[in-house]
Image 1 (cartoon, helix red, strand yellow):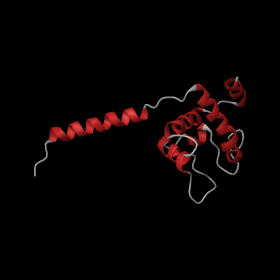
Image 2: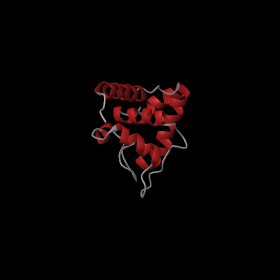
Image 3: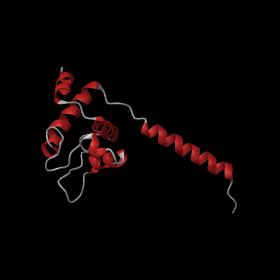
Image 4: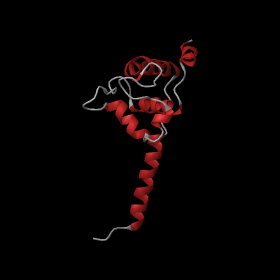
Length: 120
């Protein structure tokens, strides 16, 4: 059986376009952003520290996340880490929202003062 090389090229191009489209996720609405920031500060902060500098869980600061793949961090947020205290948050957010949180954590999560401004 002979494979048509142009068919494979088209398939690969379509897969690439699909991957780019999947990574271009829309930001959550402003109100949902406030809820997610509050969730990170309160719920995640209960283990990772209210300033996200670590506690029961590791620090969630840009310098500690720098070398970690964003998609692996999103998977951790969504599914948790079996055998640890890290729960999966999939019941409370979708993958796009988890990606938004990871992106914010990798850039430096808003300081508490900035969070107060978001709440207004």
